[in-house]
Image (cartoon, rainbow, N blue to C red; front, side):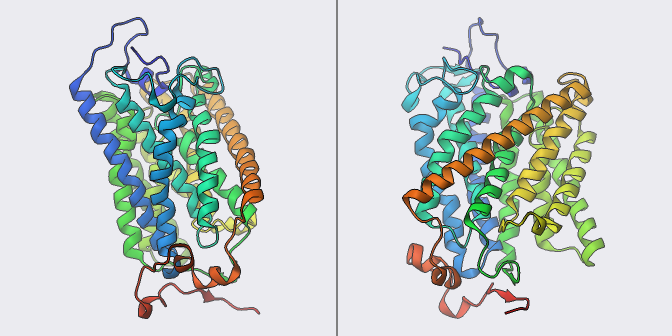
Length: 433
């Protein structure tokens, strides 16, 4: 069978067959997609290092475990129901059909020129890291069990329907013509907005903002950023679902935009604080990756410089003024993923003309803006409801004593470092009572 819910990225990439054509398996495309799926899977452990290095030493394991548990949790849920809610045949404008529960009906099927099983696996990696991204806003204070329960509900009831809206041929944003090549809306805006809502619902860390929780392991941050960039090549270029010109364009823009974003972030940082930092370099390149994700195969290489630079600028200043939101988004998930995702989605519409993709710039920009607003509203309201529901079943926060001491021992009966090293990353008190 030919998968009927081909995502927008395949249809525009030129790799898809017509609905009434006889599908043909391409071993080269299949090999590329198997590698790409593995690259995207690597991103979640990379995120664990990135987030883990940014937290206190006393909570490094719990922080990393939130990313690790996302692999196990979403991996199973995607097989059971997540895939079919996103891409199942017979769906409507809001959600996929239920014919592929447990991945039934996919055997011997093709999506474009690759086995549908491979397509399902590739998309599973996206769903996994989307949940893991949210954890950065709630580290050092959210109960591990509460995060798992919220994550399960969020993956099935928010992520999968949103993926259907944008990437399924039945989805209403797909039919409207919204462009999102590899997940700027589905993953980064969704995760960023959901993270901000979670930070509001949980409340700030103890002592915030008078107590600064400084990164305890900057080399972890750099390692994580490097793994993310490496895996992101499969994330973006793999979204072509074929090894061809579209993948090549996505690959080169995924190199250029983060490079431009890193330089831009360091320039802003140097101008404001006097010196460029390693954490700033890592953050800037990640922001550039986020911004280029929806646009990577819709804009030219020179335009990707603009996407990276503007994405980094918006996120940098969002971080500087995040306190005005009143939420303790611990690792700046909204400022980096939500803001850069929004900028990237809008610039996709403004700059898609550089490769001849999409509609006239103004018309496409309006469509992109509608897609952004719909995603923000759906993920924000949905996350709030789910968090309130979870709070009725289990407390969301750890006790104050565990929060002060660090969550690793209380949540996992383990610690990341020996006792004489646990002073790393201790809170720095900035004054006051």
